[in-house]
Amino acid sequence: MSKYKLFLLRHGEGAWNKENRFCSWVDQKLSEDGVKEAQDCGRLLKEQGYKFDLVFTSILSRSIQTAWLVLEAMGQEWVPVVKAWRLNERHYGSLIGLNRAEMALQHGEEKVKLWRRSYDITPPPIDESHPYFLEIYNDRRYTTCDVPKDSLPRAESLKEVLDRLLPYWESTVVPEIRKGRTVLISAHGNSCRALLKHLEGISDEDIASVTLPTGIPVLLELDENLKPVKPRQLLGDQAKIQAAIKKVEDQGKAKPST
Image (cartoon, rainbow, N blue to C red; front, side, top):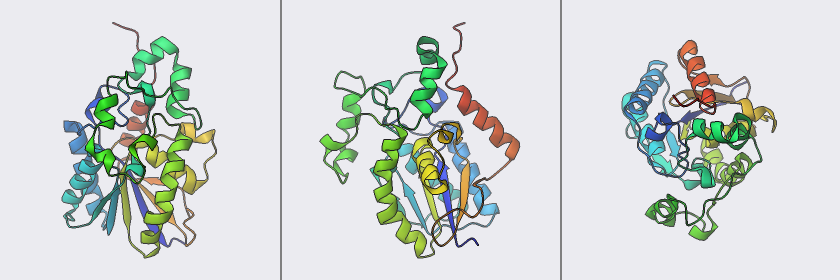
């Protein structure tokens, strides 16, 4: 018997999604397509009659912007939006800024798939020589975290994303769901995948094949123990969703230079 509804949403397409680069903690706004994806998502949720009581986002602009556009399209701009670094995208370390297809050509598709999708493999850490190091760690938003800036990650596996996300989930999100509030988490591919792994009990091996396209809302119906009562539902046109999933999966494939 379904007692609670929880919605997960990977933000709309960002500029670096379009360029097939590891964006991670570099702050990016949505692309034109990403804005449309977020608006379409809001319209779909409104048509289906859903109403949110609270929205959680990361502290990265693409996640926040997506939440705003969704709420605007739903006519629910007044709904509170709570931001937390613990919902940030996975920290891809020294891979940040690199093109996935070019890396697949250089290192092989299997290696890139391991870096992108495996549960417990951490990519090489970012250091001060990295072109985006200062842009990330000098950003004022990281002075607002509940840990000192020196303790923030320099690279993460999906397991490490789940480790930093779970305390926030348990302390802040779960109590709101238990109050009967309908919650939207507008976050990122990996923070949403990590949470799905936890809620659905997905194995370390099987999580590698879970793909979330940008801008597609995921509905989870949960029982009183916050366990799913049915498989997750990706809402919208199923043919378009399958095409979007394939597009994400193909990002890690080597493309011969033309």
